[in-house]
Length: 409
Image (cartoon, rainbow, N blue to C red; front, side, top):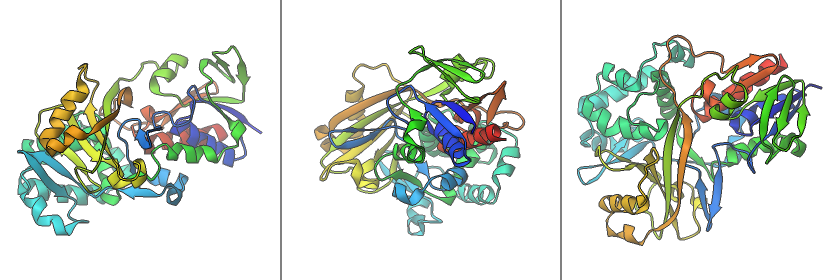
């Protein structure tokens, strides 16, 4: 039986471990923190479920959907569209193919022109009828260049795409790969943004439950990786037939510079959570900042989407700020902005937590030519993760599955 040491218990490492286990190998996941999940974690504070940064699961992900038992996650859906705060009030911009009753409101919203909205429909048709291989084979541009080339106005790009995709890419410059844009656009068109009913960490916990307890060691930090062997901070050495480094890009670069010669740049995000007596939105939808100013990028009431995110009679509000602002009074500044959106009721909201996440997503610029194999290998050491695939849950899982297949092969 092949024994495989996996460094890192995030989604890539767990997917790798599950594939190996089901193929009859003996995986051992070694995780530095106190629990599995990597960057997909959920904490319970005063009865509220706080994901570490605003995250969603796109239920159209093909490979993740095959691996996961989606019904047991009890996915709760966001409405297909957004509210855009602009000119002092909220404007509704919906996917009118699935929400045709909002056709007129979406067409009249002062977010881009009518021609821009027709271009969205054209883009939806074109990308929706493309295979993922066709998307991967197209010329890779920045998303901004791609959208300008598709004929979208600056007003539409600035008023909608920067905030909507800012929440996905964690950057408003739209410098992310256009292939990544097309992939996520297709996933939104084919399915929904969702939350597991009991928090995003239910995804990695489900994968961990498919492994025997002895296949995961928590609170064990790896300090050295050699062919067939890893060394822990405690001084203990573990031996296996192969080693898979499924840690984040920074850790991988430190442990195996031969395979990750340069640490990728990271995108940062700050997530703020507030408790309120009632929801300011009263529906399962995301609200975007379309003003072009202010710190807030997007707001959502997670308990409107999945009621278990908050105790009975309470609402959980998530606010995302791109980057990590240095302001000492950040919470106060955010509340002032929120009051301009939602009125004086904001003054009664209670701050629960602020998460400053320096390493939220690896940078994903355009790449000339094909992206590659989703993993790397040399001398029986393999590396995988979303930094080698796409910066998404789907990308992490694909990378973990592909490297498991390579180890088995």
